[in-house]
Image (tube, rainbow, N blue to C red):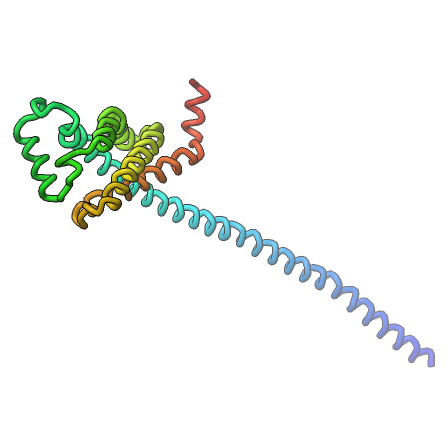
Length: 224
């Protein structure tokens, strides 16, 4: 009887110590799993950050393309204004003797080719708009061309002013053309692109003015 009791006690002790021996192994396994989850989380963080940085880079690249296209449009149409206003448009308000025969013939050819009755026989309001272009819009267009090509920050302001001035003048011109019914499709096709240019110039000026300053430019301002 005593031997049976001792056998049972020894079996109980062995079972107890075997379970006690398994506890550290289970603790080590749980700790290992926790470390693996932690390492997996840490590895996933840089991946998410890289994805976010990649999306930001793609967005910046797309905005750079749009900005480059807007700059090209603004430079092209500002250049046509800078050249056309003093050489062609100003003939309606200045003396004809101030221009060579080639430029006078070019103006007559344009008026006949595009049925531009305003240039052929300019009414008083149109002469006023041409004086505004010659005194205000022309120097602004020259400054805009230089400012955009030279990457000057003030080019956003001149671009905005050129766009607003052009759109204001075209509003009066379109009102007269459409109200009188004299405008042909060919003449409207000549003036409409300038309205599109004016809108692009305004948007470029507004977006550039509202863009935050770069750290380098902020540092230069602080040094000044």
